[in-house]
Length: 247
Image (cartoon, rainbow, N blue to C red):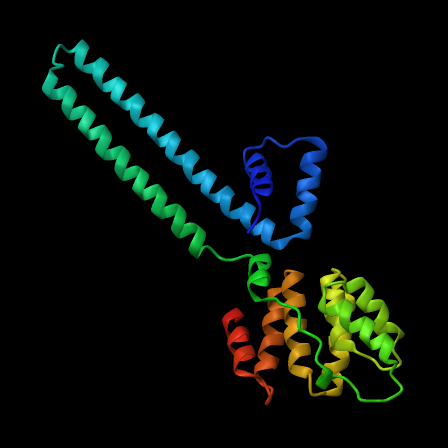
């Protein structure tokens, strides 16, 4: 959820009221925040539905006026016919409003989801797990502690720097850090290191590689990677369900 100030900015953006630096700043915020971008997309769809309803309502008013003028000209306008016109207008307007509301909701809930929307729904960074790293005693405890703390707190620049200083390679966490930093091709190279060696964490490497392709809006490569993931023997039930949902 966002605070009132953010929703005020969203409202201004959707209504075309942001200009200059404010507009550029908000667009940059959307580029850096998938959840914000998704919220804006949903509200834009709702706003468009409301505008369509308003246009249809105005058109019905015009039809009503034209009918009244025609009745007056022909000297056949009576209280009864006027009432019928008004009742017809109300019924049609109400039906139109319901149809637009239902269509708008159906459109929002059922339209083909974008890669960004699927990514937001599926992605969460893997917490650092000591069981996935080497127990080689040459690894500096200080460096590892720094890397772990930075990684688990979302400081991916710092985490990546610390992992790269370590004498032991951590391609899985380096890859996830690179994904978070939007360095997608470099992230895929790190995941491929694990996959090529068929290491224990290969299933995680395949999962995050698939999500990296999703972030790059390459759903064909994402599906191919997920299909390979599902062929692994040590896929957890939770991970299998997530992969099957994306497929």
